[in-house]
Length: 265
Image (cartoon, rainbow, N blue to C red):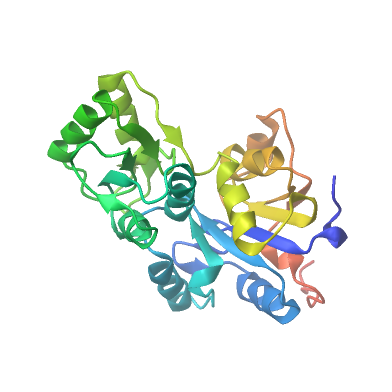
């Protein structure tokens, strides 16, 4: 188990760690600045495959957080990284938005509805019954079934929305074929992120707010794991699992060096 003073590279989740509903969490801006000052290799990770890194960088900037687009690693990028390593310059039929389609185009993939190498299902706000039917028929005919992330629901102002995992379950039920899921909790997403910044598991930490994705995948990838309590985790949630993170912190503000002591502590 690595100690924090041995950590040189950082992976961090975005929602619940750096931001909450477009508001920066305490210490997030300072921690990002600290990494820049130290020239520490880092990536901000998200399972959301709707947006491109450029989109996400702009959204974070609007929240007061400076994260260049080359410091953002999405499940869409990890998915394309995986597909391109398997079949370079392959073809795909895609259910998804700019996050996944742009990444596939940039990797030299051809978009087709005729016997594609892959059917890739990502996040979208407008799932089409026609597109889902097409995906089912292509997978039944032999196309490989890939999913960007397993999240069954996503948040909205009116309550939960069906997300990638729910649509994938529908396709699995219709085809009898399970997808390969690249995003968290598959440690593949962390390994591809580490490859992107030239990091090694022995000196890399993962900061997350969820035991069932961030922490378990971090443990499986051999990383130093830090759970922050600013997302959905509480002590009862932690105790539900047979594994524990290396560290449990109130929030990322505890990772900022020389932080002024708050008067209410």
